[in-house]
Length: 537
Image: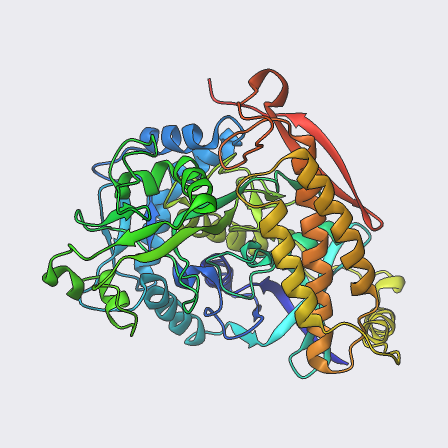
């Protein structure tokens, strides 16, 4: 078994992970960044574009207000204030690292020629990755973490496997969790395919509670053509773009939401996604770009569609909502600290900022503000541990033997004919979309739990015949656990709020449900409690 040692370990290589590593690296301590695949790519940051943050046209008070309004009373106000107060500093830090950001109406975007047909997230991740690779920070792509090492109530590193199946034990004084969300557990999603909730499960297994995982945001305008991937249609939208039903009639006007497509995609995603989801259950919904002027096709983001062989300019095409973002996750403070000493977190894996729904543009700002904070805090923590004495039961030899035994259990094989892991994953994703998608109700949630029980029994019989199966079984176990969490939490919450919709409880119920849901792992089951939220006045 390979053994590595570092001062600070960063799990995840999107914006939150890379920024936390860069900030921690300024301390002069050793930093190691892990990525399931290539560093930076394969993360949702590569699909993102803009930051919501205060500037000359958008105040910190405005930022706090719109974030709390969108969160419908379930935000942690202290974290929202931290986000707004430190947004501009985060933008300046990104600029210092070479990312050319310019001010927009409600925040900042990448300064680049409109004719460049690559996503903004890809471009600025490339800049940050080059900065990462040009310094002393080590990166290790192709390693998947299976467990955090928790001993004596503290984090001491992580254990995982390389893509070739070699086990790896990493000792560290501080760990930063920046693994992203879990959108890809759904059949319809606009996330990268590897975003399967790794960080949520690592946190649960480490004894941490998760909060509000029942709140899952959909994006309204996502391709639904059978031959195309579920690609998000990025704003800004041309004024000539239209939403149509099968009869060619305008749908935005009938949706009940007010504003242009650009406005509603920013601050009314929940209402528009729900409307389009229900409309798509009855008939096809089309996005029409046929009236867009020829010159607009040479500018971002339409120049991305222009590169496709699909005739986007000649005819309307199918769209429907898809899962986009998880509001729930790990509890942190303003410094990115979790309840486990030495463990920090940043980005979508965390909870508290968005409440019941996320305001557009806050995802990247969250990653930047709290990635920076987590990196600095982790460096401070690692430095404070110094050369502390290691108890005999935590000696390198003892830890190595313990995790060698665990590695052997993960690699255990049995003979027999079992389900193919890829088929089971497909079944899980279909179950998630059908039963915990945009609209939920009691009888279907209970039916989903029954079906999940049968899938769990099939997953138990999957043994790693190949190295690939080792990772697939882990994905199956993680996805099934998260689906169980969301199913059970959705049964408990008998109201509709923000991105959460119960068909049998259509109204927001502040009297009974101004509460945050707390999930804890109890062996193989989920314990659910609730605590009062701290809503804005």
